[in-house]
Length: 310
Ligand SMILES: Cc1cc2nc3c(=O)[nH]c(=O)nc-3n(C[C@H](O)[C@H](O)[C@H](O)COP(=O)(O)OP(=O)(O)OC[C@H]3O[C@@H](n4cnc5c(N)ncnc54)[C@H](O)[C@@H]3O)c2cc1C
Image (cartoon, helix red, strand yellow):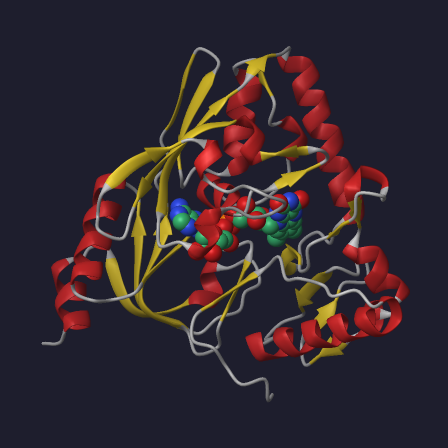
């Protein structure tokens, strides 16, 4: 019995072999995970990750898969889907396990009369994914309200860090290039009136639905906006540059630029990761040629690197 078979056998109730990642991403794209575990308790998640890492297997954690493009070749080693969803409050603090949906966290805050997250209503994904990428919208971002995170490091140690140690920036943190896994995040909020907060969240959701494709397979904005201190709100929208560069008519195979938003790539059904990568290259080339600006991917590529041939 090799290592992969031994671990699959040891955790036979939780781990499956060769599971398609297309079912675990909002893009609906991705080859197989060699091993896939859906962990709904932090103890189980920690034990599986420790055992796989001691056996030399690479470990990748995913939440809702709403900000990733998984390789057509799949992902080697273990993929853990974080379904740890305990959520509680302590005064103005909310404590959330990393598998809690960001929407559930925001609803919980509103119901408890706590303000500071409501502008992020409508962003898909989990608390863990939101911390890793410093998710945000309409002037709020996760990092601003974070009191601390509990992390699991490569050696298997569990430790705490404050926001000052996490290297947060626009849609980034030091955790993006680290093996550390987010187990829990604590948010410090301020008192607010639930009815006002709910109205604000509902308005934001309506705005988002008018702007972004609904019911399409996608991973949200494919590229980051361009930071520019002279621009209103300090950013030039990548979608504006892409639209002016003519990207809305671009497609490769079943991957296409959304007609509703030029910075969103949609899977029209059966698109492959190679299609998306080629389409993204074409979008970058068009913006570079027209504006001399280099777009940077917001969506993370996970798994075995592939050639770009289709
Ligand atoms: C329609 C749509 C609209 C969107 N709008 C926005 C928006 O307005 N603003 C915004 O910021 N984002 C937006 N996104 C992107 C996405 O929703 C966010 O980035 C979200 O926070 C990702 O969370 P997730 O759980 O899906 O992460 P995943 O996609 O599962 O993972 C993202 C990255 O984080 C890592 N990761 C996930 N969980 C953990 C963990 N517990 N520990 C360590 N690493 C982890 C993964 O390995 C991966 O590298 C949008 C996406 C969609 C589909």
